[in-house]
Image 1 (cartoon, rainbow, N blue to C red):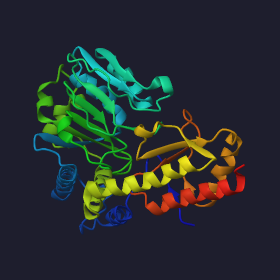
Image 2: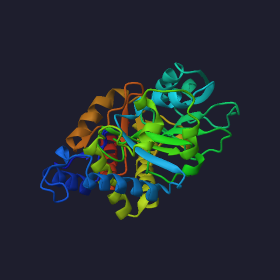
Image 3: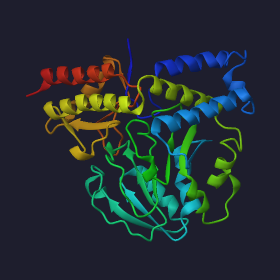
Length: 357
């Protein structure tokens, strides 16, 4: 049976990227050696790294005054790297869920944190708007897409201070004006690669704003100056990331994937709004394209286990909602095909036909 992978991460990846990665495990670029055991200090891997950066820059239209680097691990390490480098007196954070709360906790070790806006009053079901941004902040921090709650920023805001954004789960899923951000970072295990590598896109002038002496690995300068290779980088995840970016370019780039993502999301949100058995958990103007959250409607709550079991029988994987929200979460990342969303929608329709009162 064909599987339809809606996992929130690690997530579905392009088939061609997986095929090429599988080949490289046995023979990396005709070397006769596996990419898993190939030195990063070779011209062959340096070419992989260079191509990955070039594709990233091309696809996201990253200006020349920005550096791109990759580092081992996940995005959570950046929760303390960022304030360690840039929080001298006070930083502003927009609290939109678990990941910003964790970032706020780490930032408080380094200086004052002002929560300039929050959606916690409604269980993080919306993106705050129209809030005042103090001009004396060292930076403003946001999480662009919230995987647990299914909310997403829709515009690149104008800001009087440097904006730092965690884009782990929506990077390259929609157009972004990179020039409005001082730093964009994220874990790559949603739209780009297997778990194990994080990316950072940092504006040149930010490297002159580091506020304290730091351990070598914590400094952003270390990774920029050493071209992502101060220590051994995660070779295989970077290789897969490069292959995913090649696929994205081949289908028409970010503009085309944004069209596809809107189409997939609209298909599922329309069914959630139409179907009497289900309801969305997010205000409509804050709904994420990547992580679509919904629950059983009032009066049908007891049917949740039966619906989950029914979807499994149809080959659907990974739609159980996070425990903080409950219900269901369908993660529709770049490589998820429209066909998979259509299967989920058909499950919802068939289930309603059987159980709707």
